[in-house]
Image (cartoon, rainbow, N blue to C red):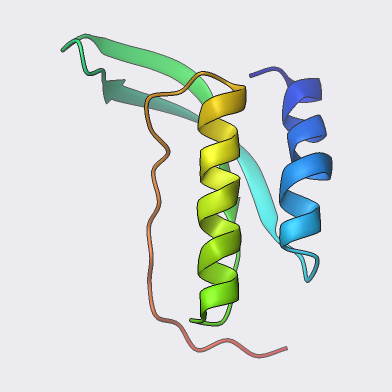
Length: 87
């Protein structure tokens, strides 16, 4: 995924679903494909804090599905943690 493709994805898919905001950064990752091959590639990490509700869950699932479809990915890693945050 190029920088421009990522920015287009953020503007068209992520921002409308998470208008309150999010953070992202570049990463380098390694993973095992369904075909049992190891792949190393550049990546992006998207981090957001949200309520534990149906609306947020629906938005997150839609973002992951759009990313997989748009960029022909086998999977999207999602990590969930309970946190206490304040601003």
